[in-house]
Amino acid sequence: MDILKTAIEWAKAEVFSSMFFILFGVLFLLASVGFWQLGKTELSKAFVYPTLVASILLFIIGVGLVYSNKSRIANFPTAYESDASTFVKMEVIRADKTMAEYQTAVFRVIPLIIVVAALLFVFIDKPMWRAISMTTIAMMVVILSIDTNANARMEVYKEKLVLVEKQN
Image (tube, rainbow, N blue to C red; front, side, top):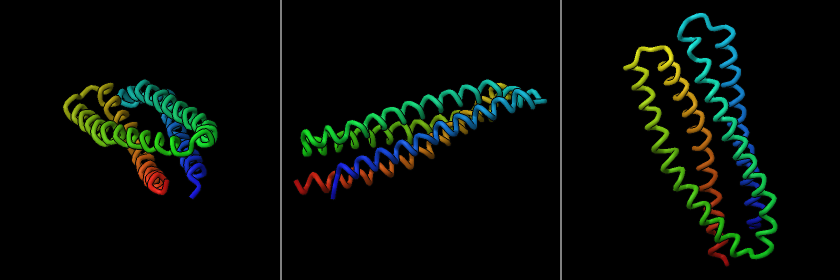
C-alpha cells in the first residue's frame, strides 16, 4: 500500500468536499439577494442579513479548508520522502486530533446550536429573530452534513495509516 498516494487522495477528497462550503456560501448569497429583491413580507425581508452573514461564513470556511488542504497536498511528498515513518506517525496524530475535534464541535456543539436556534424560533415572535434562527439551523445542517462525511473519510484514512504503521 502506497501511503503517500493514499494521503494525497484523502487530501484531494477533502478539497472537493470543502468546495461544497463555497457552493453553499454562494447559494446562501443568492438567497440573500433573492430576499432583498423579492421579499414582500416583513419575515422575508428579515432574511436578507442573516443569509448574507451565513454565506460569508460558509465561504470563509470553504476557502480556508481548500487552501489548507491544497498546501497539505504540496507538502506531503517532501514530508514523506524525508522520513516515511515520521510522516505516518504525524498523520495518525493529526487524524486523532481532527476526529476528536469533530466529536466535540460537529457532533455535540452543532446539534446544541440547532436546538437553541429552534427554541428561539418557537419562543420569540420577532421576524428578525425567526430569520436568524432559521438561517442558523440551515447553515448548521450544511456544516453537519459536510463534516459528517469528512469525519467518515478521516476514519478510513486513519485506519490505513495505522495499518502502515503496524507494518513498519
